[in-house]
Image (cartoon, rainbow, N blue to C red):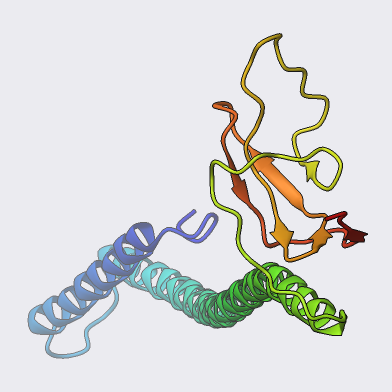
Length: 217
């Protein structure tokens, strides 16, 4: 019962029983020799004693077989434990490698996202810069050459030559009209105008449409 299921405490107790039995047999043998130093005729008591000794020897052989069997099972269990421990160590190593790969991929994805954000930022910054550059190129192509001035808040807003980015704005009767304008010498250039709630505005240099108009003197 000590090995099914495997119980180290019970196996140790069984070993102790075997040792105790062997000790008893040894003491019995010595006691017998001390009491009977010379061979004498066997008596019924001696025959009974020899029978007990033979029985104990047979029992001892049985114990020895059981001990060897237990030792073999213990070695088998130790081998299984060692194999399982190796599998656990390998699993931990694979886990560590996977975590490193995931961290590296996360870092690469983060760097890729930052790169995309930078590209989007430069794209947003490039659009108005390109528009201003095109406006300057267009201005230099006119004859006579035109000059571009940034319109300040307070200039009159012209619905003919300008377009507000605020669509479908209906002004109350008597309300002050938006103020913005862009005039260059005798050439008018249509541009987007950004108006605010106070009917003031800020002149935009982001030109979406460019048209040339001749202004009568």
